[in-house]
Image (cartoon, rainbow, N blue to C red; front, side):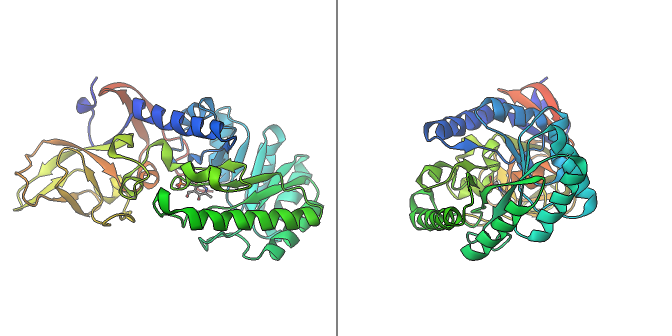
Length: 363
Ligand SMILES: Cc1ncc(COP(=O)(O)O)c(C=O)c1O
């Protein structure tokens, strides 16, 4: 079957492109002696996580305990939950996972560390804990090195957990690769100060995990970094492409849609809106549009209703009812999360499909 025969709207992944993306970052990390721990929130599919492991990853990252459960039940081990796990119900599930798997969690409060320590003690397991530092995103993470050291010391004293190092997420860095030097130098200085104070306090900060897709290929310039966690690189999307971190030809995932109406002058409606693409606006480049229409580059994907994508045709010819289009979404992680299934193909020939198993695993 060819992708043109799939009913729409539907997600398709070009395996050749995805494999190239995986290979390229795997080789980069190997060349620079960096561990790769891809964030699987982009795809939520154990089979792709296994392909990432085969291309050099040392383990994977997830955001939620439910996603870790999906990954471990598919046979993946060595998982970082890069999110504070809080509350008895989640901690019990986490501790249970840690009985048979290597599980790490990042956090920035003693409350979270204590809850995990108590649950791990009850279940007789051990959980690795990383203390997060805010390097500029202002989302999670301690904001002073002294506060970071104090929490790391407190974590180090708890039972049934191991303090294993520093976690940060440089999600605020979207400068062009060639213009990231000041931001990378800032990261290096933060890491060096933390490492030096940790050492002085008798802490063994062996793991320093950071990284994102926009900074991925500059990771070797961050002094002290041991591991990176890019997620989007597996598929890439319009945010990455308009910011210059990927080319259109590096975008592995497309949303296949059909034009269902062209009755309104200058417009065409496709059979996917915000329930197909997610409502994410473009955050890079000209910040225009909700996706790139591969077949008509000058057409603007201008607006969305829940089930209608509104295309502004501009000077383009009329787009016919029934015409199939393939669209690269703005934010691929959010788009994938709207779908149960992804079909994979080579040169347009469908080879199979994956279930998005981690979808809806929000707890
Ligand atoms: C904690 C954390 N690590 C890694 C990533 C992956 O970054 P990117 O989406 O740039 O690949 C994310 C993305 O949201 C994240 O939240």
